[in-house]
Image 1 (cartoon, rainbow over the protein chains, first blue to last red):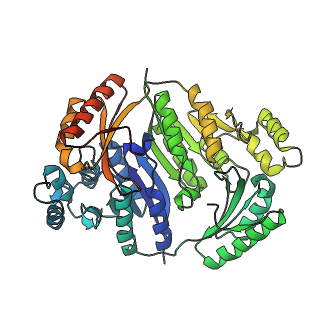
Image 2: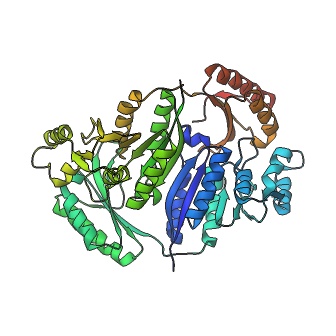
Image 3: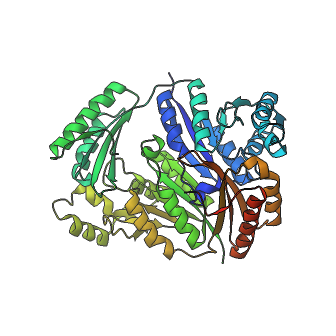
Length: 251
Length: 251
């Protein structure tokens, strides 16, 4: 099985202004890990036409798969769909099934011009199902366009990702220990990375809300057996430095 | 006063794997808003040398200012500093004051080779103060390199950003209303955007943990008076649609 890579474009001023925190990256990342697709980059970009078009063109050429979130609602600042159409050089076409489903869901009176906009998709696109609020996302070439509202985004990911070609799933095992300090064991950890060159060994200092500090050690890779073996060695390394290893990540 | 733009590079596999959520973007965005610097893009990239070097070179040319977080600790997976040096084509040089401060902080025994690594900075860089754990960040050309640990990142931002050239601060006012639906008022909102072309009018659907859904309307721009006037009109728009406007964003 080959390992595809992916880029996720978070489209919207609200993350860049600090108004909201992006919650969608983690949802997508976990779904992609399970499906064996590697999330290699995330870009947060503003609701500016040139910026969106340039980024989509660049990323669809540089990565196997591109996912986007945000900007497909009914208001004037929702410009993602028209930008994707421009980036691909195709017109927007009414998707009849989406239009009917939306009209049925909203009722004739509420299905005004602004809401009808959500049933127009770039020519050649196929809809991504949205059981939450009916207005679809869409896939065109290697680009998958989804809503920014977290509950809708999560639904679309759960519908879409299992349909994508599967690769080898990412395995990950961690041990953490309060009181452990990164500087102490850095040399041993580097030796351990050399011992297991096919996987990634990571070291992540943390501080819990109650002030307790420690380090989490993570083994991650596409061979579950090697990840298990490395995690066992990480456990023993923590013991060797006089701390008590706790399975998993600190919560 | 001119308005500088900025790009923020979050360097680290842990966000891309879904292991952790990025908490630093919001901290930086808010500090930059106050200082009148516009955060125009965020990229999350992995701990891969080529990927870091290519991104730093591209972003330092495309944006006025670049900030980075992550990868400046003592372990083998902390490769940001050496990648920045390579991107700039300069060697790493021991920064004597940082080395002394770190040795004093850690004590002679704990100041091993791995920890000494944190006192090496690219030639021509100036240190960014770190009162939390002493190991410095650094500025070189238009690139500011900071730690990924949120408490240290926040300290470095609070130390660095007030020293950067100030622009016009971003003003923002919002009203939200439970029960409001985006599709209803999209046309009126677009007309309102045309009425206030110098600022951004945004519409953000939300769902609270208790299930209550609504929409937040935001006016944002660099002329505080125009932002105030537009926010007043947003308030009246919500009233016109039979809902009760609540000041600020939903919490």
